[in-house]
Image 1 (cartoon, rainbow, N blue to C red):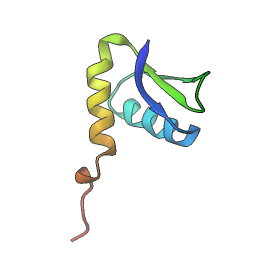
Image 2 (cartoon, rainbow, N blue to C red):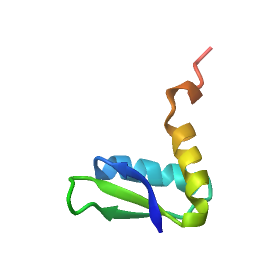
Image 3 (tube, rainbow, N blue to C red):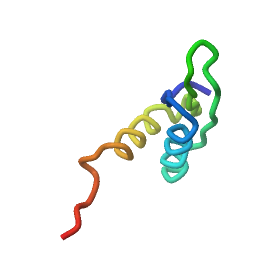
Image 4 (cartoon, helix red, strand yellow):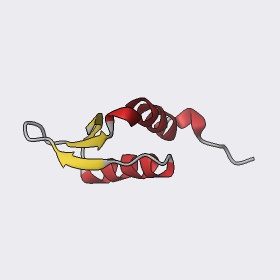
Length: 67
């Protein structure tokens, strides 16, 4: 497993994990020892797809406005 993202708290980490789950990507959470953060880990083979999913899942430009 490799680092795909680092979240500042548990809620953010779980949101990222949910984005990855919806994209069909397995992930694990691991506390960062030296920082007050949580690492989001994915299989190395899914790293690029995970980064793409996180980027598109958190980009405000992807939000659909109400008519």
